[in-house]
Image 1 (cartoon, one colour):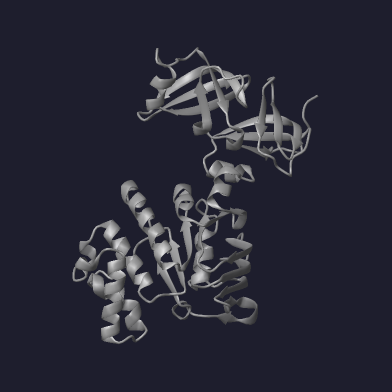
Image 2: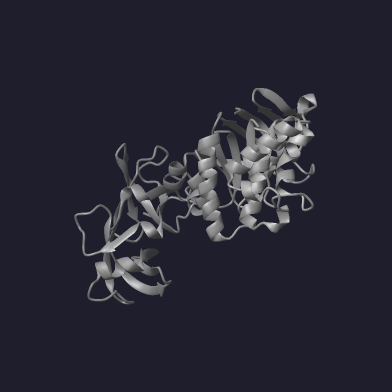
Length: 379
């Protein structure tokens, strides 16, 4: 296992182009499973490739296990094969003319490991990924999920101090991705190697990681545990990326250590949000709400953040109903499981034009500084 230090990392592909990664600082602990998350073009793969040595930074410094592997200012660059890393690529990158065992053995062959030791370690690596019975097959005769396991075994076979994953599940179908996520999580529990994982899939990141780094335009937007990123986004970008799909404008009318009270614009409705240090009374904010976090049901005036809304649209999506509600001038989308509808409304589901009641747990809300926070609230 290795500690990884990234200091003021910069990568530019041309002097006139914006930096793909700009002044990025990050410390990755030994044994951590850290995910670089973000949309295409945010710099996550470039950062990973700089750690791997496949890209040369234009500034900053990268250290693995206390050893500096890249430092452009001092003309230091350690080749990828000298960094003691294993890497799993999006495309698997298997040799099509080799058997499964030969593919897995390749890193050991390059290290000039003896034949007997090589065979033993290949068996152990294939056992670890459940492919020992496929060792003599050609790699291209396997399914996508099996090929990804071969790539994982090849990355593990040399017992590297650091594992790097570049969107390894993006070529698999939804069911296989779910299965492989579970296998990767169990693998990390067993092996414990420090791992850096790149993905644009927030569900993948939340299910696998001990910590998530959310990137935006080459810079860090937020760092935190999966729960912190998912429930406590610090910005509109983060909230939108991790699935908040309603943003309601309002003004802070109270803020203390117990929570933030927001008066929704154009209504008498107030929402209580979790406490936040960077908002104050009188400030314009946007309250972020996940459609799946809204609880519909009988009138619940005693519940926090209770409301009534007019149904303006209903969509049936099989497992879910999507209701569009009008709360004063605000449109709010609510998602509810089809199986719950009959329990909530045994005499029949509500329809367009009906008024329904609901509530929103304060813990499921995020109070964010408004996108145009410098614009004062209207008197």
